[in-house]
Image 1 (cartoon, rainbow, N blue to C red):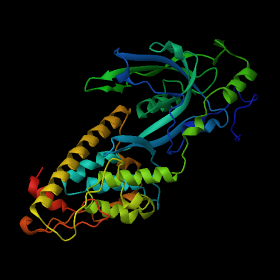
Image 2: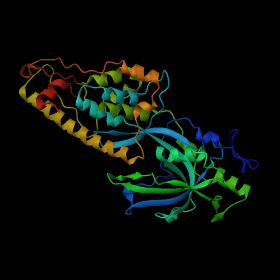
Image 3: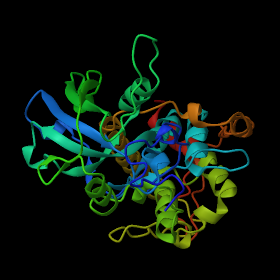
Image 4: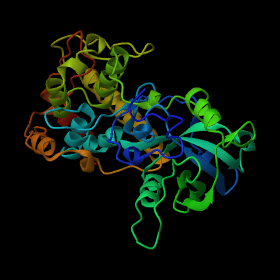
Amino acid sequence: MSNNSLTLETIWSFNASGAYESNLQSSNSKFKDIFKPAMGKINGKRYSALLKFLPYANNIDKSIICKRELYLLNPNTSQGRTIDVPMLVSGVKNIFFTAYNLCDKAESGRIRDLKQHFSSYTQYFSLIQIIDDEINPDLNNQVKIFKYGDTIHKKVKEVKNPSTKHKEPNDIFDLKNGKLFQLNITKNPSNPNQGNYDTCEFLDKTSFPIIDGIQCKKPERILKFLTEEVPELLEHEYKEWDSTTIKYVADCIYKIFPRDCHELDVIITEFPEIMSSSTGGYAYDVEEEERPVQKNKTTTSSIEEVVDNETKKTEKQQESSNKTSKIVEDNEEDENLEEFMDEEEKAKISKKDSKVNVDKEVSHSKKSVKKDSDEEDVFDLDDFDAMLGDE
């Protein structure tokens, strides 16, 4: 238990200011007990619920968990998972931010389009009690972990420190005086699956925690409730990547990038401890077989086969990119990556040479296509672009 844990002596007089000053961190998302209404799953035009924010009793300063996430999709399997994205700090490199910037600065349009695979977003987690959910009344009086984005977090900060002197500040985690939050989600006309949170607001109405169906004012019962009967908020704190996560990240990156592009070479060089975790240096699907190609043998059919396979690969990457874009849009906010990078890391990345060599002038009829037994495809990217035409 921390020095700022909730006690009977402080239950009506604690200071939750530290929660509003939480540093950005990453998190392993756990979907159990998560409350995050999705507009795409309801038939109405509005999701309305009245919520009460609750303090995290074991450490009040951690009543708001802030993190950055990325939904990483394997383009070959169309399966994805949410990955923690730690903040960039001086001297610490991040494989996702590096990949994003390499794609962003690439000369090839195909490579630039891949940056959406590495677009991350900020999420916040707090304990809330659902006072009145008009869509799902079965949730009333339950305590959940509220997952929200920057639009709501700005409203949280505003009610704590109003931008005008004509508003009284309020600590939303105060158990008797904290303002209730009116959650109003409307559909975005341009994207029915994306919610609009602009009309959400904190009301002047307050409420004690509801326990056993009634507002409870007994400190002993409230303390027991908050320490023993609510979800564990700190499950969403940062946890180091395990070996399974590291391998998944490496496998996806090998799948996302063309095998012979310069950007992939840079990532392999910069992050050998991650990229070497992929089986045999490349992640093959169970149903995917490596195509045998004889070494040092060039035929018209072999070139046509490579072109056909590259075309299919490009189409599959585009399809997975569209899925990745939808996942990001389903989150409340998708932010500018550079806002979360310190100046030193920006300078390091900007100095890297991310240009692909485009000066090759080898005749396609004389081009020799080579393939080692442990490689899936070494067909030259520039030759392939020339055959298919510029985008």
